[in-house]
Image (cartoon, rainbow, N blue to C red):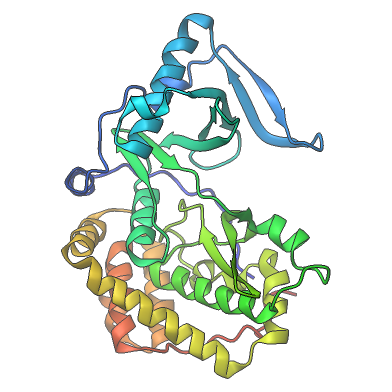
Length: 355
């Protein structure tokens, strides 16, 4: 069983990463900061439709502050979506500003509504953390999913990632009443597992990814997408980077045991490694610059780096990992392994995970 025992500390954005963000137009002037949004006068508990505490609070601002804050948030949404063109969003208004009590970065979630048709969208404002920036940028460059985010100083602005939360998907969709091909879900889990490992993105338990359902002719296709990047290359245990080792994911894993043969598992693993390698080549100097900054940054404890490089060396049977002195260097070496080992040593889904 994979287990995270302690809360990860936040790591500041360093000079080289900041330069990368400026060059890639991720760093941009915004009209309000995270700290300014925390100057609220009151907060009320937010409940879901069933009356359950969501562990979010809705923030209340004084009337004198509310107008400025809401207008600033509309401008941020315009920067995130349409390059700052306010004329396109004149009909949008801020419905709610919520604060999360439990997540590492204590996110603020903004609900923005279209008054012409009552459709709504969300975006998030968080405390900037280098781990999260690296995780999202690697996801943007190396996965099939594009990520939209902005940074200004210590403020991080992130687009909402749509999909069915993993826990809700397992509860409501992995039932006999839904018609789908279970092999398609198992296939996507194998690919998701491989992407997480190669990118060293940790803690992909069911609360930290969503599932997209894509109709295609007479079948449904599925895609698993990470939504939480706080545990990018921090933990020392290799299992943290493999979703197959989280007991919370067992409903999907057990589905894989019924539907997936060893031959298919290796085939899908190889397919995903090949696709990631193609994206590495396509990303070119942008990825090189990101990894150069990452290799110089402190993103974890020395003992975590030592443990992970040893376990990765054992997994690939390759001593190149043992020369790495940082988590960024381990990510770079992990990407080198894609060409060197089109199929890595298999850790089957059938291994015993917990007592």
